[in-house]
Amino acid sequence: MAHALPPLGRAAHPTPASAGVGLKPEHYADVLAGHGPTLWFEIHPENYMGAGGPPHRYLEAIRRDHPLSMHGVGLSLGSADGPGERHLARLKALVERYQPQLLSEHLSWSGIGQVLLPDLLPAPLNAESLERFADGIERVQTSLKRTILIENPSLYLTPEGSDIPEPEFIAALCRRTGCGWLLDINNVYVSATNLGFDPEDYLSAVDARLVGEIHLAGHARERHASGDLLIDDHGSRVPDDVWRLFERFVARAGPRPTLVEWDTQIPPFAALASEAAKAAAVLRHWQALEGTP
Amino acid sequence: MTTTLLDYQTRMLDALRFGNWAAVSSSFAGESDRRSLGFRVYANNWMHALISALGDTFPAVRGALGEAAFVAIAVGYVRANPLARDELLMWYGSSFPDALDAASTVGAPSLADLARLEYAWLEAYHAPEASPLPPAALAALTPAQLVGARVHLHPSLRLRRSDHAVERVWQHYRSGGTRETAPPADGPACLAVFRPFAEVVVVRIPEPVHTALVRLATGTRFGDASLDLGRAEHLEELRALVAAGLFTKIETQPEGGSDQ
Figure 1 (cartoon, each protein chain N blue to C red):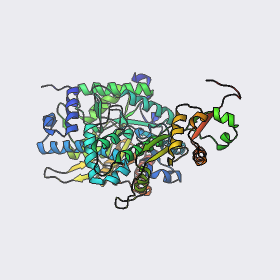
Figure 2: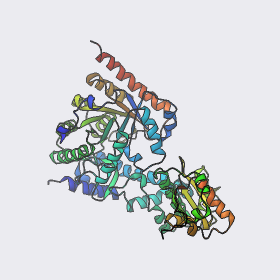
Figure 3: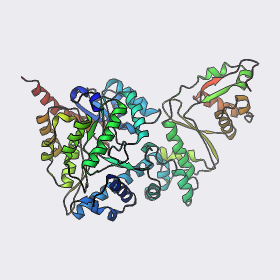
Figure 4: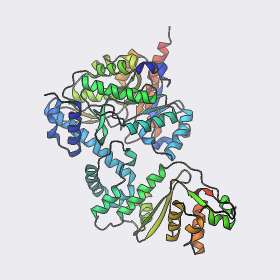
């Protein structure tokens, strides 16, 4: 079915290659008061799956003036028994209502059988899971009649039986289903530290043509005798190491819509907006160079 | 031995639910201490997400119990009642009030009803939109039309009856109160919880008004539903609720007609 879907590339993702932030209820009033006029906003659609009420009132008002991205956490695309059909139906209704410019999910699973654990769990990356992910993505894209982006998750464990490197695995999914890649550079850094690989090597292996969005965030650090463990808690400013990886990637790949996530210990809107401004400056720099003959 | 994706995911999910690292430790690559650290992160993440969801939905119960007691009860509830596959995190905890009842929390018999009020608030908060009927629409009816009318109540309305005045306790913790200054939950109390406009309102109502609203909600005509509203102040209470936006539509039958 992938051939019937919109083509890949930035033309399929009309959100400008500028900076956005995750939309938090704590910041509704700031946004409606006109702060962050050039930002785009990303939501977890699961938080807007009630029938009505204040969340929809705020989102409708903000959607009128800003591009919107929906970043799902509940489809469980990598489950051996497939993504949740009821959840997909709810997502479809929300996508039709708000028409987000960007739509994404994760390279992970959360549930099997009748139980779902609200987390992004690691799947072995091999031929069998490639089939499951590809089937899940195709079911979603066929239902929604549009392509989605798939995000590389933060990892704390490597399942046995993984024999395809993650960049290669995601590229294979993109080729097979027509989906794109939401490259979370903080997740690359977190996974690299936890599992012991070089984040530069990972990013060098990313086919930049597939990347339709970038995520940046902060993480927490635990010291252990076996080495540091990073927790992807989205609870602080983007660390310098992650900024450096971002700048290097944009220098190679060109600007992409870039989101700053901050989901715990939520700061005043101005602090979040200042992180987005840093990302926007990098994007503008490389946009200007792209436009230079 | 080849492990299928289904086998891996079934075992991993069970191990995370019950904190049983030994059952899946051989399913992951890497050094032993790094693997157990990684498992601990995943085991914490989902538990933390569900306890946080309970805390968000039941802030007054959390305040009334105190943090340590709340988390202890929440951990037991979460292990016994994981999120169902198609359930949304925002609705998690619908059976938490019953679990509090079953736990027979010593010295806090009103906790379950307090939790029921908080879940009613959540349901009202996310309920469908509907435009309240202007009070003038009711005033324009003749007495005969009013007696024979059927009304549509706001879809956000949740009615609760408790042996305890839980709305006082709820209001106390909602406005940042502490356990030391919590008011007594001397009851009983009937409550109407609804969201006529942007905000959810919680209104204490007399028992006859509660009875009338339960009847109206099931389609009983206004005259029959309000049989027990003998006292003028009860009618005034109902009128105030209508003015606050409780009715969304009124259906009258033609003068002298009947569809019994």
